[in-house]
Each structure stands twice: as structure tokens, then as C-alpha cells.
Length: 292
Image (cartoon, rainbow, N blue to C red):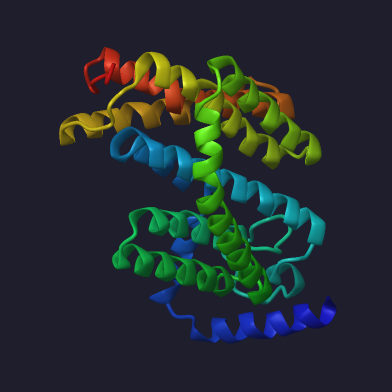
């Protein structure tokens, strides 16, 4: 492992020879493009305003990919470049283990799965560009070795390919089950994943899955909001929905004890609001129509 780290450190140091005042802020954006805040807001935007089914599928594959990344990081327990060489440029100094790169894996998962669904050359070009840009950027800011990025890209490709093949089959089977069975599966499966890897970050990821998929069948049966609307209504929908999500995330964190069970409750509440609470409010306030 020491030899691999030294090889990776040489690559990072070489990439950082290209540093300049123009590139620093550009490459710094790669941190935010893979941060939790970006996905917390972008995924609901797709569900509320673009395409419901795509928002749900994309949310699941991205959150599952994040869970795989968390497990892999703890398995390898590998350091980050700035932790091994204090003189590196490292403006963010992301904590925790580095292998595989979560940003790189998330970029391939998010943009790659979008490309498989949009099925146009432009989306594939965007997916490849974003994956390369974020992966290289994470090395530029000293948060990842090349081996971290390469493994992240590889896991992302495998997860997207497997999910694109499995999801239609599993989704069709789940759709045939009773409401009680769908809700039961949405509760039991995330709890099993938490039991397999009981960490705070895993609890947060699985909490979102639990909240979303336990309440999605209720939305599909009783609310059935239509995501299409005028531009003004779309802006209002997103503003209201995002404000409540952030209030749940930050407000509940401020009042609840710092324990994993409360992280589970907080993130499950965010998922439930995204798929049921917000759509119900949109329909009641005439910001969205119901397809019932």
C-alpha cells in the first residue's frame, strides 16, 4: 500500500504543478458538485419539476452508490493525499478515508445514469465530461489519489450498469405488491443495510431511502401530483419544497440529540417530505394538478 500511495502522491503533485489563480476556483467547484447539499436540492428538483419516475430512480441509485462508497472507504481505510503530505495544496481537507473517491463515484453514478435514461449523445458527452472534471478536480485540491478516483469511477460504472439492467425488473415486481408490502419492504431493507454497516453516514443515506420509499406508495395511491406546471409554479414549488427540506435538515439537527436514531428520523423526514409532504402541499395550493 505504501508504494501505491507514493505513486499516487507523485501524480497529485504533478497535477498541482498546473495550479494558478484561474484554475483554483474552477477546480474548487468539484467539491460542491459532489457535496450533500447539491444532491439534497437537485434530486427533489427533478422529482417535483422534471420527471417523477426519473427523480425516484436517480435518487435510489445515487444513495445506494453512496452507501457502497461508505462501506468501501471503511474497508480500505486509506489516507488522503493531504494527510500524507502536509505541503500539498488542500483548501478543503475533507476528513475520513479516501479510497474510493465518493465525488468521482457519485459523478459517474449521477451523470452516467442520467445519460442512460436520456439516451442522447449530448448527455453522454456531459456525463463523461463531468466525471473527468470532478475526478481530476479532486486530485487537484489534494483530497484524493488517482487510485481513489479510478476505483470510484469503476464502482460508479458497475453500479449504473447493474442498476439499469435490474431496476426495470425489480420495479415491476414491487409495483405488483400490496401497499402494505411495499411500505414494509421500504422499512425493512434500509434497516438491514444499517445493521450491516451501522455508521452515522450510512444511517443518513438509508434514512432518506426509508422515508422516500415508505411514503412514495401513499403518494402514488392518494395524491398522484403532476410534475408539469408553468414556469412560475415550478419556481414556487421548488422554493417551498427546498425551504422545508433545509428546515428539516438543519432545524431537527439543532433540537434533536446527536445520536444515530435521530439522524435516521431526520433524514427519513426529509425523504418523506420530498415524495409525499411537498406533493400534497403542491396539489392543495394549486401549484400542481393531481392525475387522479
